[in-house]
Amino acid sequence: MSQNLRSGRTESCGCARLNATHCRKGHAFTTENTAFRVDKRNGKISRLCKKCVLNTRIRYQYGIDPTIFDNATCGICGTSNFFDGRWHRPHVDHDHACCAGQESCGKCVRGLLCSGCNKALGLFKDNPELLEKAVAYLRNYNEQREKSRMSP
Image 1 (cartoon, rainbow, N blue to C red):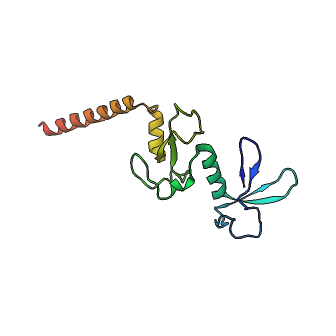
Image 2 (cartoon, rainbow, N blue to C red; image 1 turned 180 degrees about the vertical axis):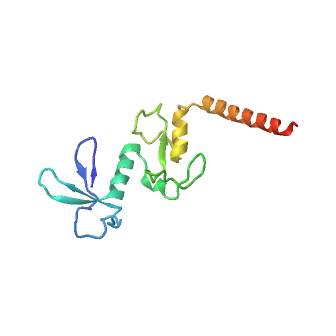
């Protein structure tokens, strides 16, 4: 089940069967992939497949197919290790000039990034001129360091 944030209703992936070993989409109910919720209206307990909930949230929030996360690499540094201590998936980078905030229309998604590269773009306010100045600054420092090593 996943919560539809706009209407407040829930959509089912068929995960509510408490005696099942897999959800209807084939994901195993493991300790890491299982959550429970209590229906406020009738008090019944439902089992949720976390993967189905996350996939529904990604479709809703970014308007993209969650299968793009399969075998993904960071669009900047190329890493495929996205674990940063808390987050296990790549960050979806989108143009905030098109869609401000956390949601995206899907047309302005630029790609997938690791946590570090996503934070870096945010700190540079998605401004290519600032990024170019940062590159020039680092290159200038490296040139000065090499010159000082060469001179006796």
